[in-house]
Image (cartoon, rainbow, N blue to C red; front, side, top):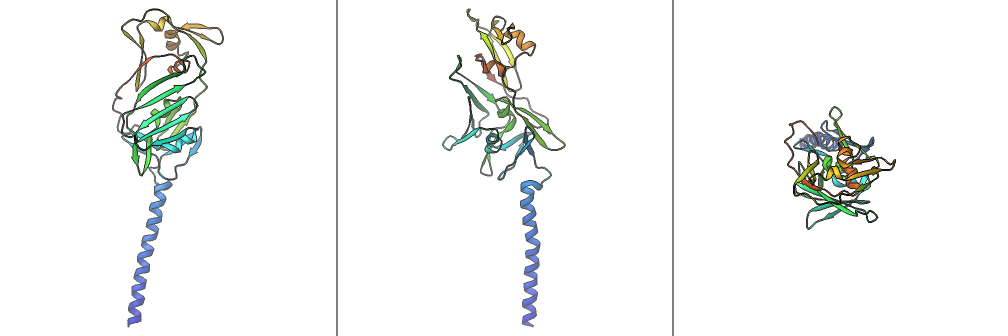
Length: 253
C-alpha cells in the first residue's frame, strides 16, 4: 500500500511538472518572437534583431532599445549614469537624449566647414524611458533628426527605416545687411519651427554646383533644398520646438 501511495504521489508531481514546463517555454518564446503584437524593425530592408528587449508602443510612439538600431546604423552609443543621458555619436553628429525629458539635442560639428558647429533642440512626443533595464528611445524623431526616413507597415507591424541620401552641396551667400527685429517663419514641421530675421530669406542667395543661383525662399518653395540641406551647409537659423498635436489612438511614430 505504501508503495502504491508513493507511486501515485510521484505521478502527480510528474504531471504537474509536465504542465508547467511547456507554459514556461511558450511564455519565453512569445516574449522574443512569438507574440502577434511583436514589432519588426528593418533598415534598408535588413531586419534588426533585439535579443533582450523588443520594441514597444507607448502612446502610439515606437520605442526601441538604444543600442539595437543606432549601433546597426553606425552610431557609437554611450551612457552617463549620473545624468541618465544616452549619447549617440557618428561623424559630425552628436545626439543627447535624457530619460524623462520632452526634448533632445542634436549638434552637428564639422571643423572643416566655414560654419563648423550648429545645434538644435527637438521635441519628443514620448520621452525616452528605462524599460526592462534598457534605455528605450523614441525612434522616429531621433532618426529623422539625422536624415533617415521612417515608415510603418501596419499589416506586417513593421517599421521601415531608409538611409538618407547624400546631402546636397551648395554655397550660401549670407545676407550682409542689418537684421530686422521681427522674425520670419522660414520652415516648419511637426516638431520644430525654423525662423530667420525678417526678409532675409529673399536676400540670402544659394549657388549650386551647376552654377544655378536662387534665393533661399525660392529654393525652399520649389523644394530645391530641404532644411537638412541648409543646416548641413551652415545656415544658422532660430529653432523653436513645438508641442506636438495629439495623435489618433491607433497611429504610430
